[in-house]
Length: 277
Ligand SMILES: NC(=O)c1ccc[n+]([C@@H]2O[C@H](COP(=O)([O-])OP(=O)(O)OC[C@H]3O[C@@H](n4cnc5c(N)ncnc54)[C@H](OP(=O)(O)O)[C@@H]3O)[C@@H](O)[C@H]2O)c1
Image (tube, rainbow, N blue to C red; front, side, top):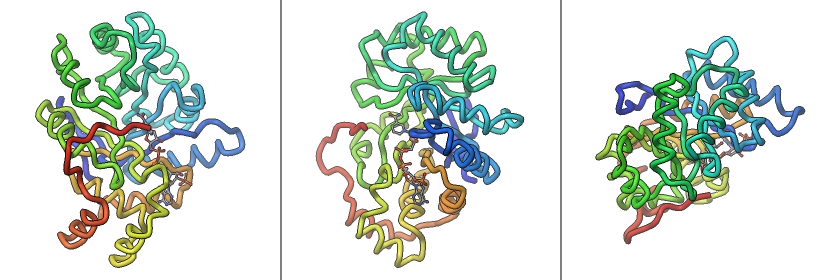
């Protein structure tokens, strides 16, 4: 499994697994836990969740999947912006830790920027880090102006990751956000890497994928992973899809295929703001 090196020199799997829309149904629980465990077994040892997902249900489901193997897995969770105050972050983190049945998060993200001053949230993240409840922190859905505001704060440069919408159909971060993050050693974590499934219905992607005998999901993931600084977190509740996605990490794309993808899904040609879901 290729890895991405974080600013503190920790290597994390470049391909992980997301959990949005998971942990919402008792009937699907077994399949979801099995998919996460299959991902960990296959080396996709990074799991992304949030207090928001399934109103805590996704974190409870992740707890089942990591039970007995916590140290193998890099656990990411997120705090709601309305919980991102000095006291609110600490309380939200403790609730997440209880649901996840763990003593620490490997990465804790501000889900998106809200009204609480960033300085207050960063100070609370730093307190959690000193207390050992989180190993590092980051942000999500932060565009260039948000990252600049963050970097102007004391300890703002300790931000490890910016988790953003990034896939073939949404390449806005290539205009300037990706380079800004890279300059400051903030890793990019690409969410919705197969467009919440929408890329699977794209005729051009299907044609290019067919020509090199891979599936559209694999091509979408391999295209993201060709960039050595990007972590991708596709969500799947299917063990078969986990295996398919895992093998995307071994696909090397030729210059011809990359050119075909650039023609079908062009990079931004004018300043483009960050798209969000
Ligand atoms: N920070 C944020 O604001 C934010 C926003 C959105 C998402 N996220 C995170 O990013 C993760 C991924 O994004 P996402 O869930 O929006 O979308 P996604 O990963 O782009 O797409 C998920 C969809 O693709 C399907 N799928 C996955 N692998 C497949 C394969 N090999 N073949 C066919 N279908 C496949 C899944 O269905 P099956 O389950 O049936 O495989 C699901 O319907 C989320 O789960 C969440 O953890 C974060």
